Amino acid sequence: MPIVPHLIADQFGSHVGKYSERLKVTQKGETLQQAPLLHLESVFVLNRGVSISADALEACCERGIPVFFIDPLGIPYAAVYSGGLMGTVLTRREQMRAFDDQRGGYLAKRFAEGKIQNMTVTLKYLSKTRKDTPDGLELHTAAGEVLDHLAWLDRLTETTADQLRGGILAAEGNASARYWSAVIPLLPSGYEWKKREGRGASDPINQLLNYGYGILYGRVERALVLAGLDPFGGFIHVDRPGKPSLTLDFIEEFRQSAVDRVVFGLAARAFVVERDDQGRLTEDVRRTFANHILTHLEAGTRFEGDRKPLRQVIQTQARRLAQFLRGEREDYIPYKAEW
Image (cartoon, rainbow, N blue to C red; front, top):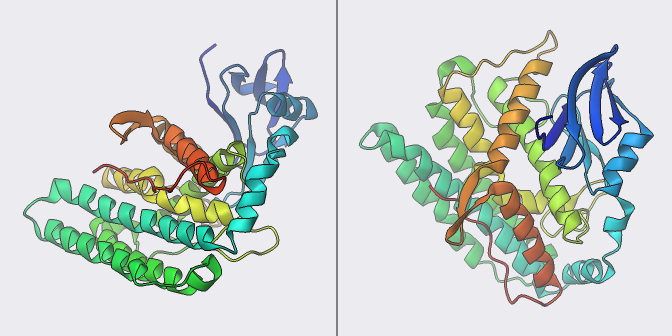
């Protein structure tokens, strides 16, 4: 039986069950996919009408395999972890204390710095195949203008995350607007991509981006939980019931390298984005695209002089975040992608 690191259940009416030492996805008696528990890293339920047995959930929790539930629009709505992962009291105490002292403000600025740096790097990455062309010159200009927003962050003198939030969001928002204004004209006109939209987007590129961010969200949340952090205790994003603020903070330094580049690459190769009669991505497209994202997360990226899977980089960064909060590291340096 082949090694399957990520099991995907996405067909309406399918069932995920445990059979001996493997999980199996079945539908009306037919086996759609199966994966040995020994090598399984995650389970993704990507559609409504999918059931999963208590035995399968228990087996996943015993082995530290998270189960993520993501709706057809790419919005994560639940995740199942082992209760034993929630026992890291010291890390969580320091995480909550940090919100009201200089550590929280420092981290808020660092997360924003990581996002701005990686938007810049992605623009330079896209310019490599467009040297000495008008598009290439525009990308280089935009990269410099996006990077200028780091100076905006440096000018913020407040101390705590709560005090810094408005200035950080303004810097991020302006940098993002410039990033998207340079990227959107590059994609084939057939996709009819006019502007960046989140929830409720009707064009295929935004739908792919949103769906990819939903998958990345699950991987980021897993990394935070394994590092002993509370995904709901963030610094930039406002606390609200059910809102995983730290996940939303931490994901920012990985969006471009983990999702944007995959979407832009697929679009450049005329990836066909089929949609149903409600204008949503079809099951086949969601499954294919999810596999592209998960495969990309396993691909090597340069990190501190070595090549490591992007998935591993995310986990390393989460552990370093926890170490900083516990006082075991003097700083937190955001991940900077290669180009």
